Image (cartoon, rainbow, N blue to C red):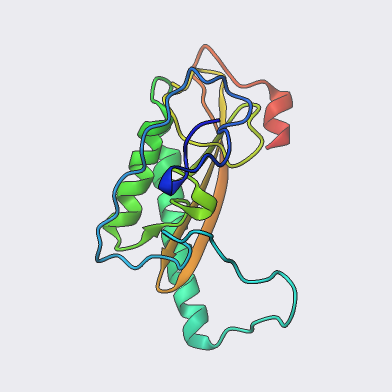
Length: 179
């Protein structure tokens, strides 16, 4: 088990299918002036129930949700355009983190269920919510980038699959069809 949770609790081993040879660095700091979601720093973390009355947003809430979703989409585009063979998952995490924070928003992944980084990056056989680490992308890898940011009281969430290719090495068509 890796020690990933705040307050030194051992929560889970991340990422599940990658050997322990890849180092997971600490989360990047978020300036204090940036508003945080309610779960940040809480132990235990409490989340609203998934059952019960459905909340219908008013026009102002919808407008704020669109702002958060737009930032997540723009951040995802920056991340996609940055992916290159030879860069580490930590490099992509830093790019995503800096882009979100520069817009005055909080990278929602940090401390959500004690997740240690700013973005979920799932390489090859990691199905979802992979933790950025020192793994260096190779030609032929395929990468899911899942960006979530908290802005104006709402979470914006976007995800995309990126094929890490060169002129010489391509991702197999069987994999591309799955994305």
